[in-house]
Image (cartoon, rainbow, N blue to C red; front, side, top):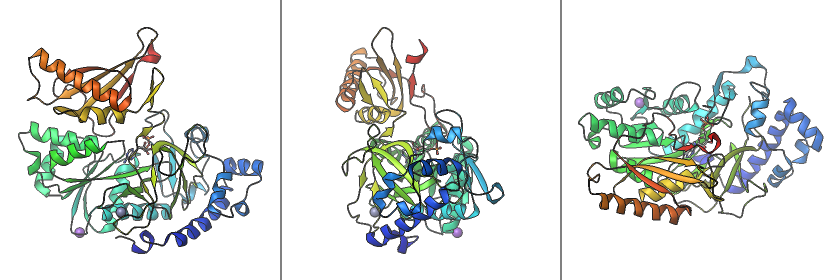
Length: 431
Ligand code: ADP
Ligand code: K
Ligand code: ZN
């Protein structure tokens, strides 16, 4: 373990630490006019936080609040104390900026080191970072985490996949760091270059930055012959490093000494029963530059407080089932793209390359799922192709509860991604 004391701290002790930090964070947030006004309005101060449950008296922070405070209305320190500025990739609108003090950066690399070590990274390893370097937090976050562990970094960044693979062959990194969809692009490209992806030196990978399923993990592991670990984070609260998997790989350990995570019903904003899916709401307990209070991530997951075989005492979170803003409402049924992925990967011969198109030609929603199938399965026999479509359609109905038209498309006809994949094309607003 990277930080045994923190990772195995008895729960009661950790809760005391969280409470102390939460109070300090409320005091720090009160320096930000945005929070000061909200606190004053509700008569809240550090004294209002007597137990962790009192977090529910604090206001939420949303992405819209961040946009309204653009670019730096949420800073709790003078500009001169900033050491770095990152931004969210703007997947859902205008980008937002986040500031870090030198201490925030030190905390961040330490948190990345924790999950990297939990997932097998050792000082003697070499890790290839194929995440974008730039405003996006993935590249630099993981980069400094790897350095902190004492392993060697190859900062290739995302893109130029052929060169990426040549570098891999020349330099023998054991570890690959990128989005899960890019891991598959790498495997694909290696085959195109006439190589067996199993021959690549990579032994394990840390993947995150976008939702993926267990079936997708299996695909990546089979195609590259590696072990794949999941890690989660978001720029608004720090970047990667909020949580990550241990060798048990049954949920991501939340770095609870730095983040207080609630799981709420996104409609009522009340806590969901333990173990039920809900929106993660995160309070960054130690961020100096931007003391994020109850940030509504819009990410849907479950929390698990049961003990883990690895000995860490932190609570675990499930995979992200989807984002509330990615959720499609199809004829009144809530559907996440990850459910479609799960359904189609259950069917032999499909690939994890797909696109969900939603339209409303008349008054009713229609869904078309385009799926690439393996070249050896692709056939001229109409009846075979039709049977495969039907199978996939049935699985989608079982998993997601909707009827979808399935179109089998030729290998490599769906766009490949170097960063986060785009899986949905919702054309309903366009007509
Ligand atoms: P944005 O995508 O809004 O620009 P970020 O680049 O900080 O912001 O990405 C953070 C988001 O990426 C998270 O809120 C979550 O939706 C998604 N994400 C990150 N890691 C994972 C993961 N391991 N599994 C699923 N989703 C993830
Ligand atoms: K080293
Ligand atoms: Zn564990």
